[in-house]
Length: 252
Ligand code: IPE
Ligand code: IPE
Ligand code: MG
Image (tube, rainbow, N blue to C red; front, side, top):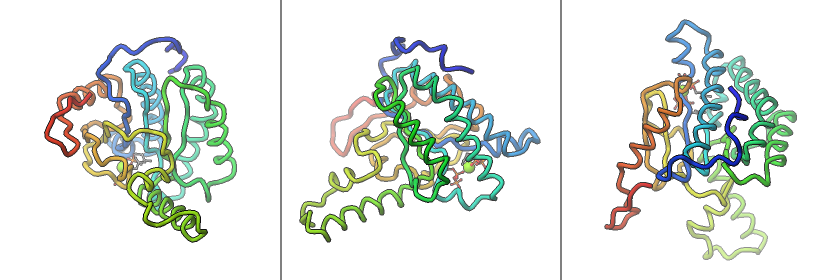
């Protein structure tokens, strides 16, 4: 499937889409097991689902799409599976970067890059550099990402500023800490979707999710498509967001 089918000038066909959708792409292994296939095949089909969803996001007028592709805790999987997942990321960037760029997608990476192999770091940097000026859809890839680690790193940066005499500790508030996270310019997700029926965050965007609407869908990630995304958005649109106040704001 090619993203080239969606011309970069095409406008959104829905105005009620949430600005920022974040997805915990879960269930690749169970999708494969249910078909007697190796887990790697589930991950491979998961990349195809990702291509579909990036294209659907364009079409639905979503501005920011964040995807959880490898967690800090996924290092506890067998080395062969980690190798498969890293191989897929390499191939995704090598094969899809040009078409993402052509479609006006800006790629951003969150997570810990230190400790990753040099060629992966270079690919991640290249994806961000090439697409820096794009404005149509921002695709945030959470790779080697953990929310606790991200918050701890922000605390470390602030502690260093204080230790070096550049910051008064009294100036540290929620906004300051949020401003030291990995992508402080990107608005918090309006909608977080998790596939495969699990109902937890698994260390994903815990700070940013403070007022996100959470939608859990039973299908496994390789089966996720535009219709499933539209279903989650319809559920989001039925929610009342109050942000601690009394006046309900429509979800979109
Ligand atoms: C999601 O699918 C992919 C990653 C976590 C990298 P899983 O590999 O977690 O699939 P299940 O949950 O075992 O079915
Ligand atoms: C979360 O899924 C991580 C990604 C989707 C990359 P996991 O499959 O790792 O989460 P748990 O272990 O079931 O909580
Ligand atoms: Mg899983």
